[in-house]
Amino acid sequence: MYILEGFIFGFLGSLHCVGMCGPLALALPLPVNTALRKVVGALLYNVGRAFTYGLLGLIFGILGAGLKLSGIQQWVSIACGVIMILSVILPGVIKMPKSGNKLSSTIYTKLKNKIGASLNRKRLSNLLVIGVLNGFLPCGLVYVAISRALTSASISDSILFMVAFGLGTLPLMFAVAYFANIIKSRFLHRLRRTIPVFIILLGILFILRGMNLGIPNISPAFSDKTQEVECCH
Image: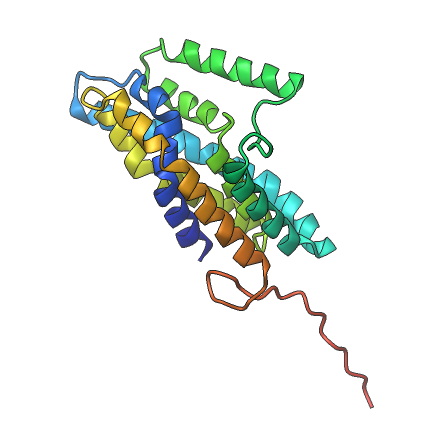
């Protein structure tokens, strides 16, 4: 279930990925001498991103296990949903996380410099490195996916969700990289206009997930009830 959910989430959210990371995908140094090498290069870039998302799934899956033990997972889901909706309705008051402090700004700058330097190296293996680094760049959609990973049933489910999320973004991101020569920047600008609607819909889904309504795949019941221990007679 987590694999399918993650893939669908990534596939639907790939419009956001194209809008935000499209310029990087358009600038990838893909081999052009053969179609096969170009396909392999585009795949390596996307596999690199999926690897990073899986690593983030491991990290936040461990954190989520702690939240589950403390019994606040569903409240985290509701809070994330509310913040997502408010970030669209009140953009000047509630903002999605960015490189807000000095440490994160420094890390973000180093990542951009690393990626920029890698774009000048025309090796297939280098495209994998670019994908891995790209996965660490600040991204609202990835933050949402991480929030979902926090509420997974186990660490393995969190990893599977994040990897599947990355693979879900692959078809559209692959297309952007492969057909970079015919895609215009105006197309990416138009895609960005759909992002607020998408964020609101996801926020509603997160709130429903945390409300423990017992609706399969939308608002599943949290199994946190303690089992009664019967005495032996």
